[in-house]
Length: 583
Picture 1 (cartoon, one colour):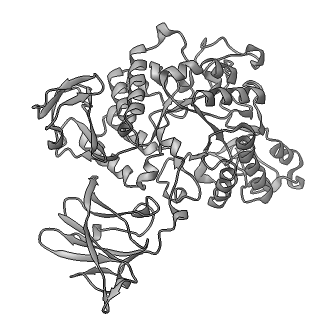
Picture 2 (tube, rainbow, N blue to C red):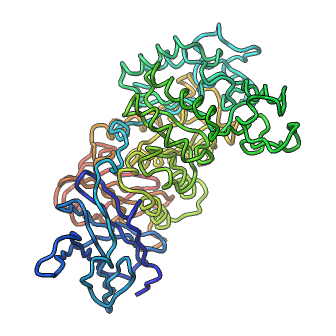
């Protein structure tokens, strides 16, 4: 038994409350080393005749990555507290593992067990329920639709007349979004994530000048009111983008520091190492990524903190927005985010708080800061399989399991899953124009757990490499749109809405390919006796897939085509990049 691979900690993603009376407990072991794990547990205060009362419950292997197996069990402690350990069996040896280490047998001292002191309802992680049923659509406002030419900035170019650049403008605005809401409703999305709309110098608006004003090229506050009301009437939620890590160069407090130097009353609003300020070649004040026009804000300064907290409150209070996406969230101090959550949730408890973090984000997801993060590890795995050919299907499943076990289940249900954004090449370009791959990527995205997002234009096959190429004007000429791709995504969204099991209602388990030459990906979703199977062939080769026994006893329908399969089939044959959703 490989003891050094066995890992558990009584918190975060290894022991957590999933409801007011139920716990999930996990343990990690070396891959293919352990054949059985039992949870040994009891209430620390329940004794009979000086003997501590213990119970045992089998754990099940939930999944594996390339190095480890992950075991899980659900438990309902009658008194909402528990001491627990693990009985491990590798087929030859049996060991007990508790907080005090390894023992040759189960021991009777609860002090040697791991402890979950009390299941306090206030500590249960709860993201807004509506997010679990949301399919997002990301809009880069300057490039989506020009609905009001009267607010076009100077030197606005005709729509789509040039390739996008860091400094050209095409006049996209909020009025344009209002005019295109029927299109979004036809597609089936029910959430819009806007990149920043506040007054800024650039076309991307991540260099804020005034956090309390709409950028004039996008419209005014009345326009935003009308947009949000129109969205809510259609059942569409609205999430705005906030840049609290840094401001723009023309932010008034930073301009005051540039003018007055060390005498400026705003000098402590930023992280300035010395005076006078030096902008080039490398600024002598902290910025975002050494960009001198994006000075980093000092969120530990009381004035800065209160200013930004009021920004968060204001747009929720006055415009009834449904979410905040927080840019460069990992570079802002945790204390600020804890106060931010309290501030905005006090106005709208069901507000969705989404952090932009590209790495393991557990420190921000303990219920006191964010509801979720942008799931870029998910994106990376998709690209490595379909676009770069760096993973086999077996390796892809292993990598996806690594992601799944990074967080508790209820966090996985609201992670913001994406395959492209304003920061990345478009997914069709990543796949070198292979629409078959893009269709299957969206099949996976829209049947996986989490809250999926479509980057504007990806649903009609728009192309574009790195920024600024990925920020083209939306193509509104239907003759230039890939309508087959549009209808494929539209159908998947409808399936997700009509079959909750294809969203976040079920427990997902991958079927693990045994060898690297098996060209299929499959996962099962189960809930209260109901189940669905998703099978994909992400290769250029025909492949056969052996159906699990539980799917061989009754007729199955492929929800993608609507066709029923004969009940005596035990295998299905998948053509290159063909997908099945079986129920």
